[in-house]
Image 1 (cartoon, rainbow, N blue to C red):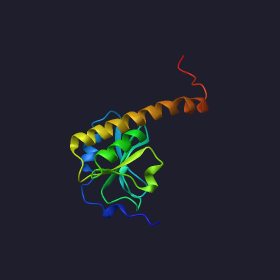
Image 2: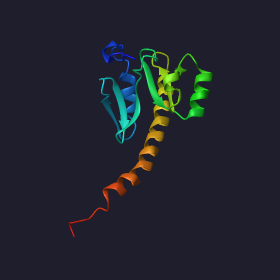
Image 3: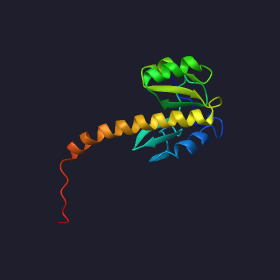
Image 4: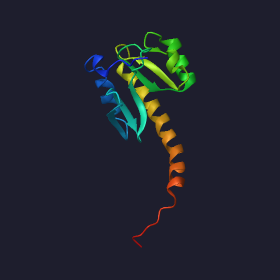
Length: 138
């Protein structure tokens, strides 16, 4: 399947996401390999624009617990949805044109907590691979 180029997105579609996301600790705005904007925390995906052809234009992809996303999709299908491509991941798709800023803040906060928890679980493995740190200053 061919990817939709990032330039076809509405100008400024990610601006509110960037503004809200950068208000969370340790979040950085960056771009994916295709040039589409995304947010990371501890070098890990927090949220980004959905670029898979199965997603609607100007759709945000954000981490969500599977049971939470099912509730979101059921309660507000005009805002939240899934496609088969994204279904097996702990993510939800969000129509940026329809989500309220407070709901966006809540979504990004949940994604932030999930991402930082994942980063904390990953760190002991990385430290074990690096070996013990030796303090040469003493």
